[in-house]
Amino acid sequence: MPSVTHDDAPLLADLMPWSVAPPKLGRGWPTAPDAASLKARWDALVKAEGPAREALFGPTRSRTLDSAVAQLPGQSTGTGRLARESGPCPEPVRVLHGPFDEQWLIADHRLIDAARPELWRVADERQVFVVEQTVPPQASGPVVLVTSVLPLGVGRGGRVRPLFRRPGAAEPNLAPGLLDHLGTRLGHCPDPVDALAWTVAVARADRGGCAVPLTADPDVWEGGVELGRAMLRLTRRDGERPKLPGGRRPYVRAPLPPRPLDLHYDREEEALLLGEGRISPVPPQAWDFEVGGERVLDQWFAARTAPGEAGTLEAIRPVGWPQTWTSELLELVTVLALLAELRSRQAELTVDKPITAAELREAGVLPVPDSARRPASVLDHREEGPEGQFALI
Image 1 (cartoon, one colour):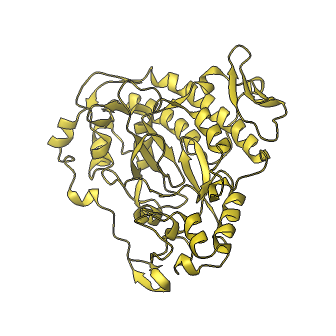
Image 2: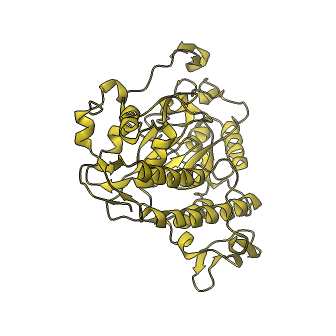
Image 3: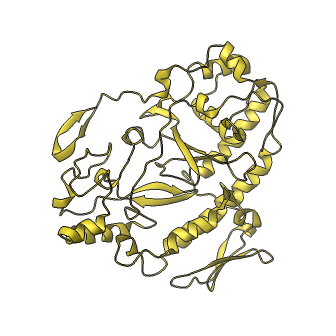
């Protein structure tokens, strides 16, 4: 991790003050690594009747077949009671289900115990979500994860911090006055994405939470922002697909079986073994990459091969191993390998000329006003409430 010369680094919780607990599904079946399984699960649910439908649904104190809830912002799902539902499956949407693991979700509020509508209201193509990892200071792996899609409970994730408080990249979720103060000290005013890139490059676990050392050195800032932006391009998984140089790109060397049941790594051959299948080259840094003490590739593979309990909706899964999963795995190996290389540059980043939390307090940036820790009001659109009623939010 970056070396620092002070112990008074401000906390992420103060620099990005508005945060939301991650969504809590309450049941596993509305998410899956493939969208087709979700549509088959929905069809099985609405074809069942009475007690059979209830058993498949999995009622909780927050959600039953008779729960009346509003539509999720930005979604066009039904709001009638699920006990009467007979329509087609809502179109699944992409979410971050685990570290570097994008899956699919039936984004229907009736299926989700705690969906966090305030996150859905600000989710658009320009939004970036930061997921703070609750890990001890000595744990390996990144302290924050960044994603362009809405995150569920990711890794040992704590609070979710959107970069912007409103849609359209409006009103950055940063301590009021922070960018101006940085501009005064650095000689130029950074934009919100610069601040996020710096955070990704230098964030470290601290006893009080996630610390973000700041610098008044323009050259150090520029180097940290450049490094952070390179990391953002990989962790957000948007734009052009990442590639390793020709001789280092992973390929399928032996066909994967219809349903690989185990995952191993041959360190000497730098090969990933999925049953009889073989992918190489896979650098050790990609295999060893962890988030919160858990190997990313192990978690990704387990999410696609763990059998669902017989008779449940989660048991509805692909019969074989879809080709799209192989493509996603090759890309994931590439992302982890490139991130591992960037993390070695992190270790060389020295944050000198610190801007401390004490300085920010003296400048009036900290403590942030209570209003900065609350979501912004959204008054420009209607959202469908229970049973088709509309509410102005």
